[in-house]
Length: 287
Image 1 (cartoon, rainbow, N blue to C red):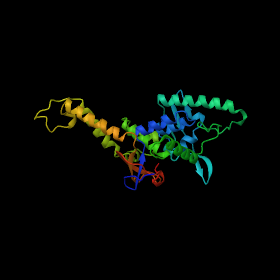
Image 2 (image 1 turned 90 degrees about the horizontal axis):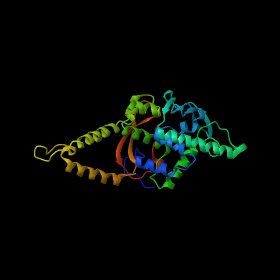
Image 3 (image 1 turned 90 degrees about the vertical axis):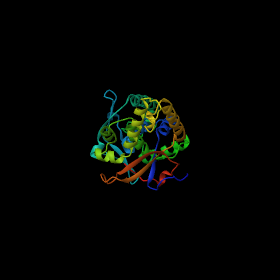
Image 4 (image 1 turned 180 degrees about the vertical axis):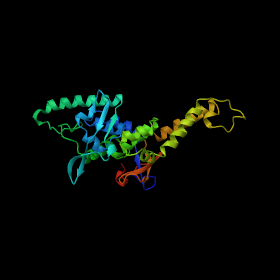
């Protein structure tokens, strides 16, 4: 793999196009539902593996995170979530509900075909024979799928951070993102994704300015690019499209710095810029 043209304390989070390309590639995979929940709802790996059938409420459109599977010295055990905040109820969007229903239908069919060979693991998201999904195996499987899809190398855990940055880009309130991810405080959440906010604010300001076309004249010279006139706005739009084509599908650079709120958690300074490929083995882990 090629090295990353960025500081050593960086790792990559998937760009929206990259997340979409990955999910499209695995659309028929038996574990699509699991990857979908991590990519859109920001579940931790162990939380997704630990989900039980009773945790899914299709009528209430929610998912309860109450357990996780962890690998302890090679043995898989069921534990409580990482923190008290990890015990949470996650809202499900319409598409996620469709994915859940499709998964349940496929699982019922697999159970019938397996007969007595079906493994009663008590998990919502399972292997084809009903056995639970081991977290370490899942990460290895994800790596293989990413390579087969021909996508830049990222870690499974990076999908969770991608879910957070995408949510913020969609104007989701910070408190909602905190609850979705199961962070212990809104301060941790805002510190983790602190640099996302100024960039989003700048983009919003530019978008608003472009809605008001202005005549080019001496009086308007020097105003923001979005307010100089329709022709100027079109030029800016063309530049944005060209930039998007250059960076589409490339990962975002993410700089790691201590947050100081949770011992195992590190803050992320998210930079909305593309970067070259990086070996996942060289990246530091964050929660």
